[in-house]
Amino acid sequence: MNLEKLEKSKGVVFLAKNTDKVDYLRLAKLSSEFVKRNLNLSTTIVEPFQDQFTTKKTSIPSQWKNFFRWEAWNQSPYDTTILLDSDYIVFTNNLLKYTEGNFDYRLLKIMLTPSGTMESYMGHYSKRHLWATIVIFNRTNKTKMLFEIVQLVESNWKYYSRLFRLDPYSFRNDFAFTIADLILNGYTLCDAHHLPFSGLTIENTIQSINIIGNFINIKTDKENLVVPKQDLHLFDKQYLLSKSFLKFKEKYFAEI
Amino acid sequence: MQKYDKGFLTFAENTDKIDYLSMAYLQALWLKKSNPSAKYAVVVNQLSNSIIDEKHRKLFDYIILVQDDWNDEKSKWRLQNESQVFQLTPFKETIKIEADLLIHTNVNHWWDALRMRDVVLSSGSVNYFGKTNTSKKYREFFVLNDLPDIYNGLMYFRYSETAYKFFDMAKIIRENWKEISTKLLKKCYEDIPSTDTLYAVTARVFGEEQVTIPTLKFFRMCHMKSAHNKFPEATDWWNSLLFEIDENIIRINNIRQTYPLHYQNKDFLNFYERNYKEFI
Image (cartoon, rainbow over all chains, first blue to last red; front, top):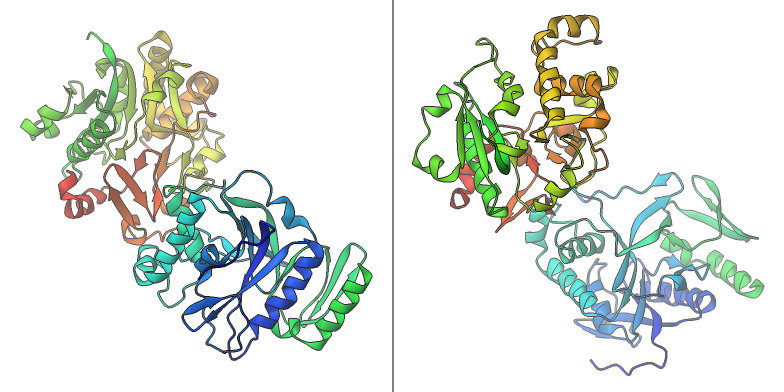
């Protein structure tokens, strides 16, 4: 697949693979609007079409599978890429800072929830995993190796799950990137490729979101949260695709 | 006894239950592999000495037989002769290590740093992630008595007046242990002090600043105890965690080990011999 080199060499990539339950393509388009508004960057949505990858739109549904994130290396047309989950909503321009400087790749180490640090042990006696929710990378040899190892881990998950004492039926990109980062760093724990901030995930079912000055008010079925304005990882995809969020989005874009 | 150069020394005083000599042999193999110019001395008792053969003589640079046995015959642990190390060592500079400690990386850089003191007891330990152990589960007595968190299983000393005084003080404390343990220490249940306890008390009396360098972070061992490494107490750690040897590299649970590995559980030797025969 040949892609034309885009004019801008910095951009955001979403990998969107529709399932019967979630229209990830629509979700990615929604997230990309926030990216364009707050980061002022180009976005590319990559959608698998059967076994091929294309940047064109399709509407072929498929089972949700947590696979193929390694394809971001091949499919990204940018020199510096921010690879985001479709449910990661960008409310600030903070991510731009982490695209600067000389680096190969950067992965998110700590993910918080309103009640504390999110559970992140890979297995019973294993290390904490990184979060593939945000992957920022430059097109370097080392990054190429990272994505190749991610692909290797995914293709040989049975072996790697045994090596790392993990559930062989629970492949996650988070695990694959963690294992790849560990192997690439000579099996040593190294923070050099980790983003120096914590992500925030809202796990519960969302009823409403409002921006009040420099704060975001999130009402869920379990709590009423007020957090400083920041990028958010919102698990409730149904809310993100709902009319309520659409209304919030229109109001948000009108005000900024 | 004339002292020469520098080297590593361990005690391999076999009991009828534990084969320290085999541990020392494995230790020497790894040490010589990662530090080809290192000299290695082993202190033995009569029991160990009786089973020394050609392969040991080929590998060990010095084999020293303890003449004056300070161990209590009834005691399970053969620890008391360790206080004689100052007299027994053949080296001017000695790094004393416990027999169940594997040095698998090049440690030439240790010597220059250790020379800042005449005696250096290693301070603290790490887990297999290479992170400082913070659990005080095995050191409650030390915490209660405000003793330094030292490990005699990895220590350095130079043939000097300071070292002589330190070991002499340890000897005096050992000889007066009953008095010290009952009147000066809280909740001390050791009738015969372990070497860690003895040296910690000695360091406290002698002056910790003279015999430790707490900021010397690389002079620590990886201590494979369950509370430090989060594996179940009742299991052997090599059954809970994945142990690999990749040429000269040791990995535990896919984490490359950079600190000396204190495998601690003597049954590890059987596991090692069963699975890594070609490395022996």
